[in-house]
Amino acid sequence: MKKLSLALVPVILSLLLCSCKAEIIPLSEAVMLDNDKLSRKLEGRSIGEICDAWGESAVGYGGIYSYGDAAAVVFFDPKERAENAIVCGWLEGRYLRDKNGGDMVFIEQDGYIAPTSVRTYDGTSGSGYDFAEFENGDRIKILVEMIAETYPGQATVYAIELIEKGSYDDLDGDVLNQLREMGWAE
Image 1: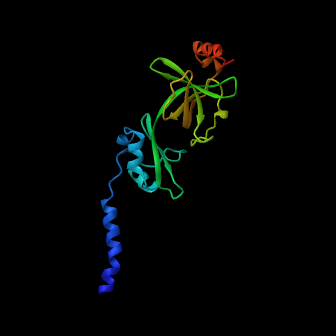
Image 2 (image 1 turned 180 degrees about the vertical axis):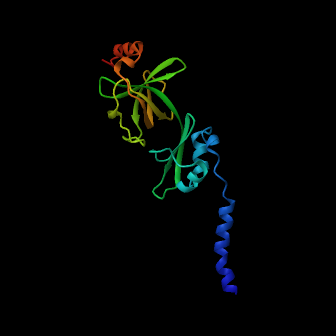
Image 3 (image 1 turned 90 degrees about the vertical axis):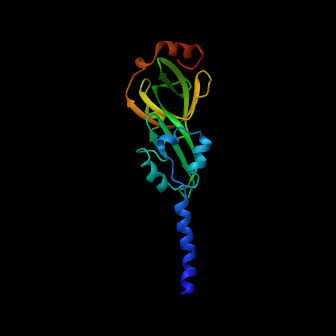
């Protein structure tokens, strides 16, 4: 009998430790945290635990959990445990391939258009889109952590969605002229 009860000690301790583990905060709260706090709250959590708390990641995206115009991007280690996380925002704009073959988005917010030079996080996009698939003037939605305060701005894109096809005529002429003067557009 004593052997049986000693054998149960690790199982009981394991159950106690699991029950004491804090719940994952709601996604609505997670997207309001700074990146360090979010990373600490999720560190070591499995994909399954995060999906149980937040639902499945956005279709076509690995580790991206959207909440309105915000999203938490979770990076997992090879054992599928969270090791880092960042808070990002979805922005809409028109696509432009610059004269050197780079990618830009004319981000439209509050009546202001901010041209932004963009690149994908790791050369690909979790959404399956590649900027090469877009034509000048296409309306797209991009997921970015921040935009560098340069002109034009610069941003790393974690996901991309096509909203609607467009044409060069859909691009703002005044912004295009500014970019031409600076050598960015033809």
